[in-house]
Image (cartoon, rainbow, N blue to C red; front, side):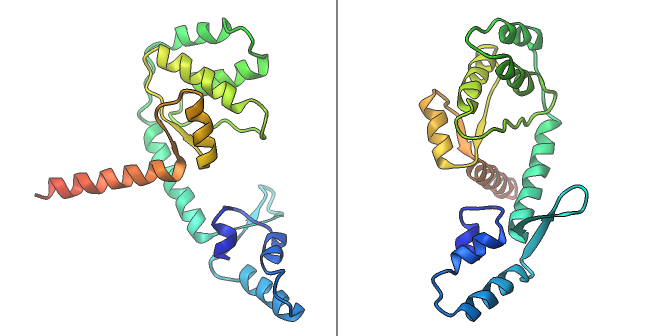
Length: 188
C-alpha cells in the first residue's frame, strides 16, 4: 500500500492489482488486494450523490487534506488587496491571452479568498496563466506565494521566474517548523 500512496493520494482497485502483479500465486494476489482494500487505513471515496467513485485514499491523506484546508481557511481570513481596480484593468488590457485565460486570471487575482486553485490538464496553459497572474500581482505590490503539487511543477514555475514557490507539502512543513520554533522561543 505504501508503494502506491507514495506517489498517489487517490487510487483505484486496478492500481492495487498492478502493484501486486508480480506475485506468482493468483490466490495470494487476490487476497492481498482484498486485504489492502479492507484495511482500516483505507477510505472509499464517494460522489456527492452517494454513489461509489471507485477511488480510495488513506486516513493519513485525508488527515493531511483536513490540515491543509484548516490552514487555507486561516489564510482566507487574512486577504487584503489594495489595488483591485487596477488589477481588473490590467487583466482586460492583456494581449495574447484568450477569454478563458482572462477568466482564470480573474479567478486567481480578483477572488476574495486567500487561496486560489487553478485546475487543468497537462498542456492546457496553466503555467502560462500563473506566470501572467504572478507578474500582474507582483507589479501591483502583492506578495505571491505559489504552491505546486510536485517538484516537477515547482521547477516549471521557477523556470518562468517565480521566486517564492514550493510544493504544497514543503510549504506546510516550513509553516509547521516555524510554528514550533516560535513556540520554543516564547517558552524561554
